[in-house]
Amino acid sequence: MVAIVALVVIVATLGISIKLFQQYGQPEYAPQVLRYFDVTNTGISVEFEVQKPADKVGTCIVRARAKSGEEVGAANVDVPVGDPVRVTYRLTTTARPVVVEVPRCNTKS
Image (cartoon, rainbow, N blue to C red; front, side, top):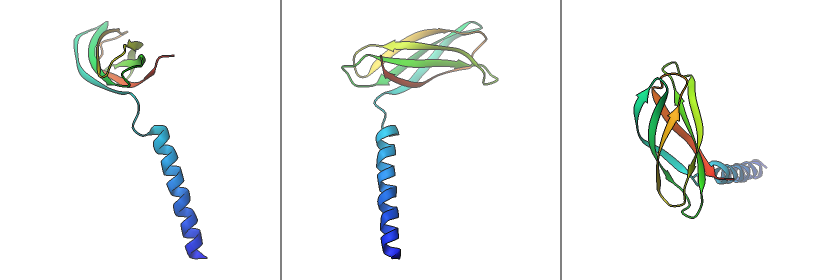
């Protein structure tokens, strides 16, 4: 009986693991910030690269944060066809940013 319960638990765990990996593992879009520059009190420029399916147009969220951690600017940035794609974008901010990030990208709808 213990062996049957253990087998059921192992099969259920494996099934859940596969489902979660399919849902969250190895994202189709992989953005990486290469550099940010031209930092002012009203904006920041960012250069980032996106690994993605070559035949799809995408959209990436670009976000800037102040020293306090507060979000001071955000935008949806279009990413053209190709793989990888390198994009340079000027983000307008409401205060001086200290960091910029590209947390995620996906297929443009």
